[in-house]
Image (cartoon, rainbow, N blue to C red):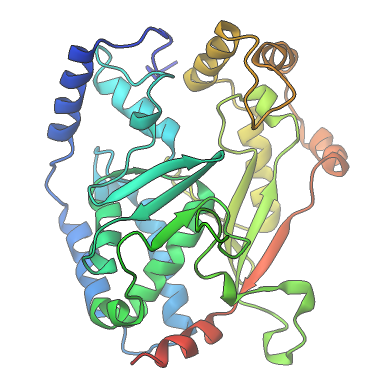
Amino acid sequence: MEAGPSLDLQMLSEQQKKHRTNLWLAEHEALVSTLLNAYLKRLEEGSVKRDEESFIEGTLLFFKVIGSKRGEYFGETLNGPLYPNQITEGWNQKHPQRPITAWDQDMSWPCPPGWSSEDIQGSRVLTYQETKPLSEGLDKLLLYPVAMDCAIVVQLSKWFGLRYVYGNRDFNIIFGYGSGKFKLTQNWARPFNEAATDGNLLYAFYEDCSQITDPLTLRPRVQTVIMYNHPTYLAKHPAGSEELHNALKIDDCFIAFDPAASRIMFSETEFDERLRQKYNLPRDSADLERLLLWRKLPHFVHPNYAPKSFGIMAEEADEYENKQFSETEWKDAQIEREQARSLHFNVAKLLNFCQKFL
């Protein structure tokens, strides 16, 4: 097994933490690659045709930049969107003497300068805190390390798709959010709540696919889809990120947020097989660290898992350590899994809305 998150749950001293912070800052003042510079320049310019096709092209390009082509744009750095476990593993491989451990939630969920990343009632909220144009804030999400999951990324892709269509100047005219008003959360399928701590700023442009009656939109091109793994996934992988996957769907193609993969585009059948393979992977060091934490605090009850204590969860995890699904078993277990959910993203409605500000 490659080096990953430290299995030592001891806390670092303040001096060690300070040294780690200095290493972190030095590590991420890396030169921006030629390809990434060219991509940011493309976003600045916008598209000649401001239509759905350009939006789709821009959204797909964003997924490739942060996914299957990540190495070409970011090299070996930790810059750009990554899952928290990937940031932890990448850092600890380079700096085993100053690791990010289970106690370091602030380090495993980093965000760029000018942004905040908070856990609010068990849900992650990223907020742009500066008064500078939103395009500059979004650039920072590619120029610095930032922890995200697939739910946040599937929203972010649409904002980069809009920049690809309109270019920075017009994009900033349309979306002139003040300080602290632009937020990305883990809940994309609902409007923002009154406290603005949960929801999706673009929710008004989503539609239930089963409720579409307009003949021109009977086959929506852009959807966001939630694909579910087996309900015992978290028992097999206590720190895993594939309990479900929020995917972008373009026509019949499902696009995953998977920065470590060389392939991110799948048919529906292939995406389901991807979930099976993610389940069948052996536990990694992040899973082992999570189990050690549960066993160290057996009576603690986390609100996300109530009424189960960490000790009970560790016992359940022991039962599934070596669980594997064959293709036949996976098919037979379909009834045990939640059915996929999807919403149509009405690009035409959004583009018509944007034109009112220009």
